[in-house]
Length: 315
Length: 287
Image (cartoon, rainbow over all chains, first blue to last red; front, top):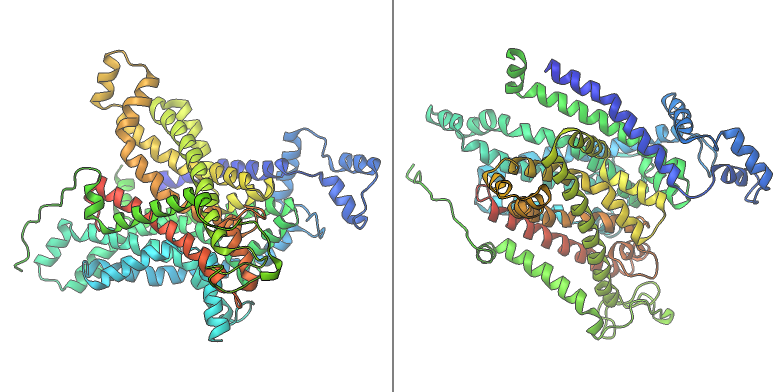
């Protein structure tokens, strides 16, 4: 455990450097000249004179060598400055931080729905293997994995907001607003968790210690919930990290559809306006969050799995 | 408990027999081949030009002249749906080829040679996997600018990493098998061993990997198009059609439902087929 943690923490800075290089290069590939775009914004859309652009390029250091520009960008990024938006001129880091809570609310609500519904349904399907319950669960997992959120979201909006008028179609602020977006976002992950829980639980239920538990007369409920599920959940925990990445990515689409004021909506607007620093800042931001979540999942996994515990202690 | 009898695991041999035995896989095969067939035959079908505007007949509901109605520019929805299948299938197959190509080369070299080459390649893989894939895809496509080709580039650049690692694992475990030693002993070079002997032996899991990935690629590409990053007007493409339909979904729900069901069926088909192929190769998975 200690050695593993040390290795993980050592590779963390390496990964961070790599992530920052990729994010930096993104803007480098983008068409357009930052100095010209900035001047045009300040002059109200008028094409700036050549000399002014050259002057600003020098002032901003845009003509310096790539490593120097990267170093400058990273050092300000570390201090929480991701540059200014080409369009509004406002601080990108500030805007991302302001919008992040909305995205995190959406993603964590979706994750909770997926876990709370997906895992018990997977258990149910495994316990009732071969029955109609199992068939229904497996069928809905298949459907859930194949329905795109950008189809389901408008469809549910039409049904629950327009036809039935139970929930608001778009908006942000009340719990009612959260229901539809979180539900749609959770569906893919829910299906994945259900399939995985079912498969691993069936696997575990065939093992010797379960036969022993049954042989000593434990009730089926105790066998499944106390003995089998504990072991079956370990692989499920590992995918939670990947699920977070999937949810953060999916949130971009969901936020656009539901007018949810999160970072995803911000970046989609940024892309449509060719506001590349916004895209760059967004990628960096999301990758760092993803990295932290995965680290937490990995550590908790090591901590949950007793085999890895003892392995670390006795080796 | 009288039902504690030994059950012989069902053995499935041959290529087509499991398709017959496995309803899901057979259904998946039927859906996928049906859609591919319609897409290939599209120019021969009695369809209107999918890009032909008819502003007098905008948003008309499904009728005899237009079986699925017309869109907001009066274009025939059925025709756009069928030509859209061509766009979607072409884009996702090309992306899949690029993805599996890069992943095979990187994975094979990494697994076969090991050492610093392996370390270097796997660092790149780890780095790419440190990004949430859809987010990096959106960013790459967004920076390159909206176009079909750029979406394929974005998806390919982002998606190959996890497969490279899987293929590396397969090559790694194959490297010291007897058949590789045998091939080397009769004078086969590294390239020949990788391209013929190892490739042949990991072909099964490789095909499963590719088939199961197809669904994700289709969802990803259509998702990027939905965000306006992919197919540009007037090219018919399912994701872009869905995006167009959003403003008219109350009055013309068929514009949402038709491409929605199309994407769903195609993804479902590939997933069913992939699941079936996987079970065929590994009979121990629980169904």
